[in-house]
Length: 117
Image (cartoon, rainbow, N blue to C red; front, top):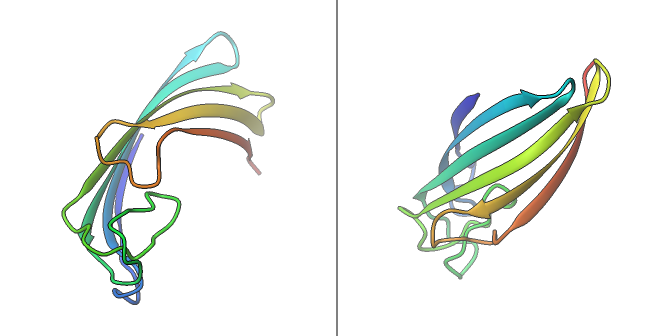
């Protein structure tokens, strides 16, 4: 799976303009387990001026930071999911930066539970 898009703020002074791309590959192992890898890329198109330090919030916060236009943050993730029933699954992933630029992200553990209806 892959997705791309833009985060275009209503007020360009309060938030940054960002282009993002994410890629995901998974492989079924056993009857109901899936292993996966992901890559995420954030390219900062335009800086805001709300936050005086040149640090980005990645996908967690749009800080409107100054002086970050042209910067890139690339992360990778590895994880495992288990389909519990036809309608739900649970997963865990460890995400880490692949670039020297990290923003607020150093390492992150994510757990999710999905219910389909």
